[in-house]
Amino acid sequence: MRAKKTDPELPVLLPFTPGQASNGEFVPRERTRQHRAAEALALEVGEHIAWRCGVDRRRFLMGMGGIAVTLAAINAVGCDSKDKKTLPKGVTAGATYDVPADADANAMCEKMEGDEFIFDVQTHHVDPEGPWVNESPATANYFRGLRPDCAEADRLDCLSRYYYAHDIFIESDTSIAVLSDTPSSTDASDPLNFDDMRRTRDILNELSPRDAGRLRLHSVVVPNVGHLQAQLDRMQARAEAMDVSAWKIYTPYGPGNTGWFLDDPRLGIPVIEQARRLGVKTICAHKGLPLFGFDVAHASPRDIGVVAKAYPDMNFVVYHSGWYPGTREGPYDASKAERGINSLVKTLLDNGVGPNQNVYAEMGSTWRNIMSDPTQAAHVLGKLLTYVGEDNVLWGTDCIWTGSPQPQIVAFRTFAMDPQFAQQYGYAELTPAIKRKVFGLNAAKLYGVDPVEQRCKIGSDDVDGLRSAYREMEGDTHELRYASKGPITRRGMLGWFAAHGGRWQLG
Image (spheres, rainbow, N blue to C red):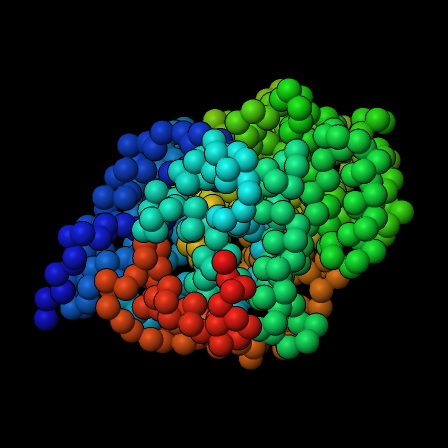
């Protein structure tokens, strides 16, 4: 039986494209010849398997099969060939993906599926109808460019609350998440203000048993905009309302493209002291990845070690782990520590902050942008696990900027570091137990979540039920938007949500 003819009006695409993918905060590097070769190979192999199995090519490539053949193609092509001269003898790549080369269904399930507790500590969406669209049209147009795959008339809709619920909780294995925000000078210019974040949380939490809660919130603090006391007062109001699980700061952001540091006695120290007084003792700091208009110098994590040493009872989460696009990651080298993961390692070493203390490394966007280059990815994970600690590396994806996090989840789940490579550089073995810690157990401890109790509460909630139905049902591929791995339409999902709290809530 031959594969069904694919509708030429719909693009045939992979679940993720090998190479870098911007989260809106940087211009991705040009894809290498190896990246393009991996994409071509994955499409070729995927078409062959679809033909052999008699299934629609697009449907096959949009699901686990597409993830499998893409990761297998990265293995085959060797997307990080520049590193070959520095690899230990006999090692062709620092790591590979343990996926079935022919995407056999049984082998795929065994290798690519898992039951980990996955706590994504960095997720985003926008309000496509908020005042910011008119207040900051350039920002709105920029966000529209993040999802060129979007089939909606207005691409901002693909970054909305509806698609957030779909991509994070229906289309991936994510258990719970933190909804984060971006910095802005006013609520009117904020793509997702705090009231809308609470609305999203309340909608999703209504679909779970009482107190189960699939969503936590950050509150952004911008001490260098307006009056500092107003920022501190807002921190107090939100903490007293029990609305905040952690604070989010962007030290490279500020008027006139001038940022600030956490150890600044005028701006940073007052924020730390207020968080400490309020008892919400986790501060998540954007480091690395300089957004357009950001102050590159203040994207450095050099202040993290300083404040971590001074405030041992506070927790400091380094978002993106300090990763810097354009910096090729290798083993730690103090002479090459101005940017990238090395800069985070250096501030810890300089200030005597050891592994598994009060500094955490988060991998949002970082993992997505290095997972096409397994040797770089092995160095990043090796350095973070060694210097930050296996208990302090946190799972984050920065989605939905790049769509569903499921390809990132499967890639990390199947990532296998070469033992000789790990031994050469003194990296710990990346065991299933450590992966479980990174996927969610570390974040659960940081955020005071009991993963066993949490899984029991959400294991049979309405979100889980919808996820199961979504994966079991079949439908016409004409109903699928790009990146959807199943048949449930926007109309169908809106109808389902309407029966569980009202269509008006979805926006």
